Length: 468
Image 1 (cartoon, rainbow, N blue to C red):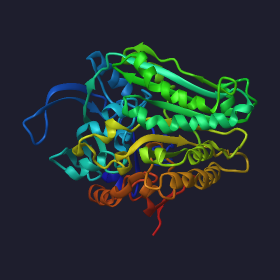
Image 2 (image 1 turned 90 degrees about the horizontal axis):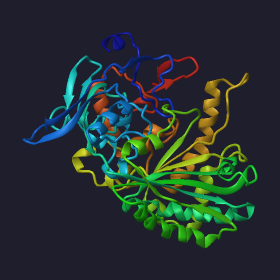
Image 3 (image 1 turned 135 degrees about the vertical axis):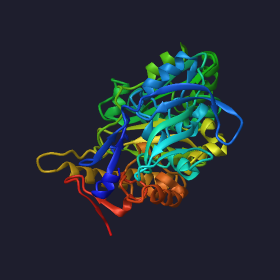
Image 4 (image 1 turned 45 degrees about the vertical axis):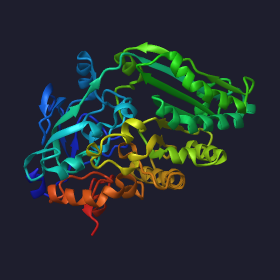
């Protein structure tokens, strides 16, 4: 990396994971592939720095994927706080925060880290923990991936594997166009109750759609319906299907106040799906993390969900799923990603995580822009047009809905004009000082990363130039 500094080359650190919006791509950049940093060892008597206590941990190479670590943990009756897809790598996932199916139970991935080994751009190999290089250790846990050095190893906590997992999908759709208003009202009721349900031990994710997306949930609906369709997957650990049903049924009863069977289709059937391995296989994606286009992210707490009127909540949800192509609509993904496990983590496990996580229950993720490259529009121009649309329609909504909340940087809009506040919050200035200390040559670049506003990145020709 000293060579990169001497030759004015900027580096993007690439593992086997990938930022959802492609910030780790680094077009025309020099990448460091961490794939072969793949050692994994359980240490049941790891010495906790600065104390006489020991911890049962995994020493994990930064090039591993969670699909490498979780099966080994489960073989030993343990779980680690992974992403939802096994192809997600440790590096950027941990450094950006790292939510997943166990977050509301045990906390974010960044809150599991007890120590890192990191190589700086000056060629120093440092150990960072609660006693050594504490500023760097703070930054690595939630301050953004690939910005302070190259992590080669993480020491992470693990937890007992659940004895069983109960899953159930609550589906909502209008029966026909006569149920449009009822479906939006019912969707708002469900959304409002999600934080309370998380406090009882439920986790999961919702997909809310309208337009042609809603028609996928109910083929009898006219293509492009203006109604709302939702699938809310709930899961809970070490419990029974009957208990989960008892938690969700009162919410269904309230949703039913807006429409009976003649206007609304509402179904929920929880069941015990067995062990965590089967559960994780059921919720995992295509073994490929990432997507095309631009998505926009917002974290919301109890206050943003509970302290607004029902009408305002309905309006916000309608705006959230509105797309540039109004007939097609888009999908809003609502992750039950915060809650008790995150909020109640010990103070010394927070690091540089976005302060919004102190209140966050829900993580909202949506796209909707539809400009595509063609013979007259370059990829860079299409990206710029999409970014403008998302800024005007989605970022504007989030600032009105949750002005004091931020975004989850790993799945956020890198062209968000308020990225310093939304991604890093009050931690930004301290992070900037740490980056200047450990990467004084500014060899590491990430779009919308700490200090990146001093540079102009041209996707079309790959140039990266100082703005000043």
